[in-house]
Length: 86
Image (tube, rainbow, N blue to C red; front, side, top):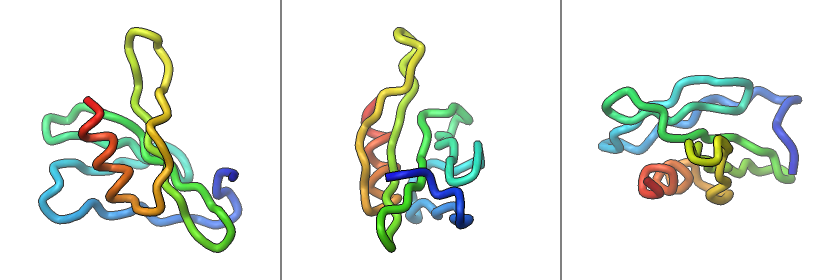
């Protein structure tokens, strides 16, 4: 898998009622921001064949590193993983 650099991927829209918003961080990378304005993780789009997978990551302050939570075929599943991994 690789970052999708050759084609621009539009930001996914969180499902209605999900209390987060996405803010661009880099091409194919978005910050996931909760209702209080805190960044709770990153959502990264990756191309795989003709499809797009979404990688969920959270920042761990104790280690000062990102924790890979998983890769999903659905942006909503990746966002839920970030939300509930707190």
